[in-house]
Structure formats: C-alpha cells, structure tokens
Length: 155
View 1: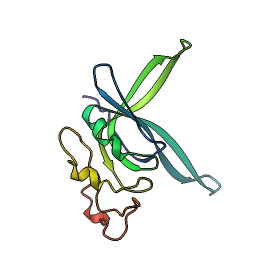
View 2: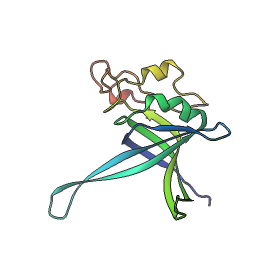
View 3: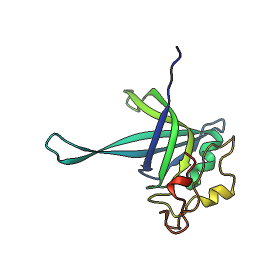
View 4: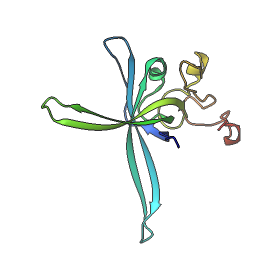
C-alpha cells in the first residue's frame, strides 16, 4: 500500500507574509498561522492550546496570493508536511517542519481590510494559482449582511 502526506488547517496569520525570490526567479512565500484547540481538563477547567504552523508557498501561487494575506487573516490551507534542516550562522544544524501549501482559501474572518473580492476579480481559483478568495464578506473582513450562509459554502 502507498503512503499519504496531507494536511488541512484553518487558522489565522501571525504576521504579514514574506515574499522572496530565489536567484533563478522562483517565488517563495512564507508565513505562519495559528490553530487553537479548546478543551476541558480533568478538573473541568476550560483550556486552550495554540499551535503555530510554518507555511511555504512556491511559484505563481505564492506570488499571486501574497497581496491578499496579512496579519490576522483567516485562511484554509491544504498541503503536505515537509521536514528539512539547515546550518545557522554559527554552524549549528537547525531543523524545521513546514507545510508546503498546494491550495489556499481566504476565509474572510478576522484581520485584513478586504474580503478577497479583489482577488476573485483578478482570477480566483485557477490551475496556476489554487487559491479561492471567499467573496461576500463586509469591508471589515467579517461576514455580515450579504455574506454567504454556511450552506452555500462548497465544502
């Protein structure tokens, strides 16, 4: 039997993304998102646990979506886990776990100044950039009058 490496996350950006280019011109977009779990401990007290995930997006998709992401923006990420290592300035080996995104959906909750409708007007989901901004949210980025009901969301 084969193997599977697939990750699905919904979270909020911790800071604005960073777009860089390799010497041969490949775009690499990096950002981190936080996911929070809520649970009751043995004594019944409510607790929360936040996990930070490093996200990397390569090529045209990273280039295309960079302008629509900012600190606090809620996103759905689909991708795969990638582990890598590098040597820091002092020569110490460092290890990092990243999610290499293959699909990004802007959800429109918290943060941001727009709903992503601008991105939809510029192409939305295409084969070369698999992200799908959700339109219909108010200017603040929160759903309001005119936003889609959960039953209308296609997933």
